[in-house]
Image 1 (cartoon, rainbow, N blue to C red):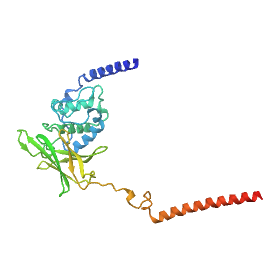
Image 2: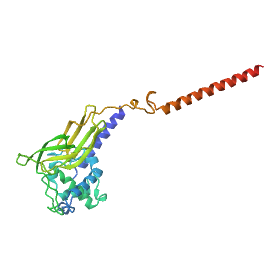
Image 3: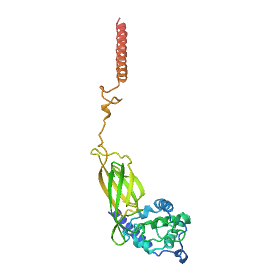
Length: 301
């Protein structure tokens, strides 16, 4: 009981310390606040930034999920995909915070180059629809962002075309139905061990559809599979059971001639070899017994 009491005290002190540290003000200079992005705001840069984020930041911040406000509280690091956080920070402020760190967050300027820091910020901005690229991000090279809201996803399998079709159901800023073009979607396949990716980051076309070629998934015994489609920012997702291909039937190896089959299915040469070896062993045993018997008879004489 005394040990449990001490653990509770230590845990409480640790949480209070984390909270007090996180409550400290960020150390950001005015020069950093005014900084502009020095890398191009392109899909390639964003992809590189995502890789850096997943390696250095995701362990604490988790996935970027688009939401009106941050839905994570201390001691968990905030959701950087929250609109309230995105709108409250300039690119320079993000740069300063990531560079200098605070409390339990280390200063990444010692681990990442300035370009890598900006690449992370370019990835963070993909979850903010109202973001206007500045600095080195030329308008002609900036990635077009769908301005509207994805309401839902609908996944089907086109048997004739041999492809999955994910339809994005969306509305524009005025609330009118529209096609969501250039939105990245991931498709995953559910197995006994969790979800396995079928395709990641596939963009929707001018009809708001994401077309994914048939990856030849193994269906269950009823000919169905469970797939999950989700936007790359994880804001909208759908899990669905889809009729897919012919039912899977277990083909027991005992139904064929094999090493571990029944005697009726065993290859003739293997069966003959086995019987010959067994017969030879028994002949050897009887011969040995006969010789021992003869020796015993000679001793009696």
